[in-house]
Amino acid sequence: MRILVNYLPALKQRSGVGHYTAELCTALQVLHHSLEIDLFPHPSWEPLVKGTMAKLKPAKPVVTGNLQGQSYSATSIIKNQIKGLARNGLDYLFADRARRIGCDLYHEPNFLPFAVDAPTLSTIHDLSVIRYPQWHPKDRVHEFEKRFEKAISNCVHFLTVSEFVKQELIAELGVPSEKITTTHNGIRSGLSPLPIPEARAILKELNLPQKYFLHLGTIEPRKNLLFLMQVYCDLPLRVREQYPLLLVGGWGWNAEKEAAFYHETAKHRNVILPGYIPEEKISAVYNCARALLAPSHYEGFGFPPVEMMACGGAVLASKIGAHQEVCGSTASYFHPEDKDAWRDALLQLAWDDEWHRNLRKGAVEKASHFSWHQCALNTYSAYEKALRNNADSALIAKDFKKAS
Image 1: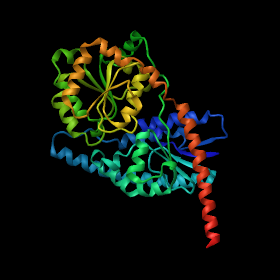
Image 2 (image 1 turned 180 degrees about the vertical axis):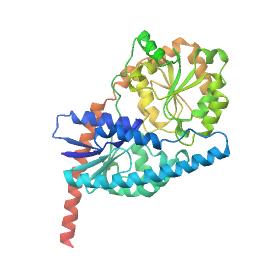
Image 3 (image 1 turned 45 degrees about the vertical axis):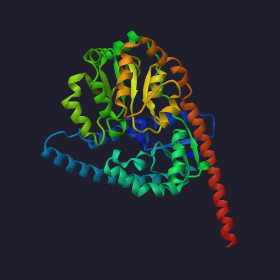
Image 4 (image 1 turned 90 degrees about the vertical axis):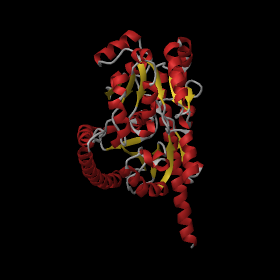
C-alpha cells in the first residue's frame, strides 16, 4: 500500500496540525505493515518553506494609527495573493507527484485536499471555520467556502481527531458515520515529569520566571485570551506577583483587541509573552507551571491540556466537548465566559496546595492513553477501509454502467 501524504504542515512553524502531520508520519513509517509513505514536499524542503513562511507571516496586530492600519491591510492583500499563487503551484505539483508514483491513496492531513487523481482521505481537525467564521481571517473563510464542499464530496473517507468532531461532521455536513474514523492525537516525545531543579535551570536559560500560570497556543479570538487576561489582571497583586501569566505562542489573526489590552494593561500586571519556545524546552515550561489554563471557546482536540497532563500538571479548562472528551475527570472545567468562576479557581489554585495536588492525580496515567503508535494503527485501519470501500464503489459503478 503506497500513501501520498501532504507533508507541508510539518515543514512550517509547527502548530497542532504540523505536530499531527510529523508525528503521525513517523509512527506510520515504523508500523510492521506493507505500507509505504511518500512525503511531499520532502522533509529536506523545510528551510525553504520556513524561510518563505517567515516572509508571509502575519504582522503583529496594529493597535494604534490609521496609517499603520492601512499599510498592514495592503501588505496582507499582497501576501494573500502570493499564498494563492503558491497554492495553485502546489496543486500542480501534487497532481504530478500522484501520477508519477502511482499512489493507492492520498492523505491530506490539513482539511482541504489538493486536486489529485487518486482516492483521497482527509483529516478534519475541527469545524471552527465553518461554524465560527468570525474567528478566522477572511481569506481562510473564503478558501473554505470555495473548496470545502468539493473536498467533502471528493473524499472517500475522513479522519477526525476526536469523537466530538466526528459527531459535528455528521450533524453539520451530513457525512455518513461509516465514512469517518476517529483517531485521537498522541503526545510528543520528551513530554514527561522532570525534576524541578532541572526544569528550573532550563527556565533560567530562557529568562522566564520559576513559577507561573501557563497558556500555550496562538493568540487568536478562539482561544479566549482577552477574557483570560482580563480575569488574571483582576486578581490581587500578591497573586500576580507570585504567579505571572505566561502566554507561550505567537500572534495570530484578528488579535487587535488582545494586543491592545496586553500593551495598555496586561503587560504592566505581570502578563508575559515570550513568543515560541524551542521544542526541546517545552517540557520544562509545562513542568514548572502551577497549572495550564485552557479557556478556549472551541477546540477539536486540544494538545496543551493533554501535554500538560503528560508532564503531571494541573489543568483548568473550558467546559466544551473536546476538552471533556480528552481530559475526562482529570481536569477542572468552567464555562468560557464565567469570569467569577475562573477568578475564584485561580485564587484557590494559588493558595490551596491540596486542591492543586488533587488536580494532578492521575494526570500522567490519563495522558498515557494518547499515543502516536495507536493513532497510526487506527489510521492504517482507516486506509484499508477507505481503499476497500472505494473498490466496492467502483465495482458497483461498473456494474451499473453495464446494466444501463
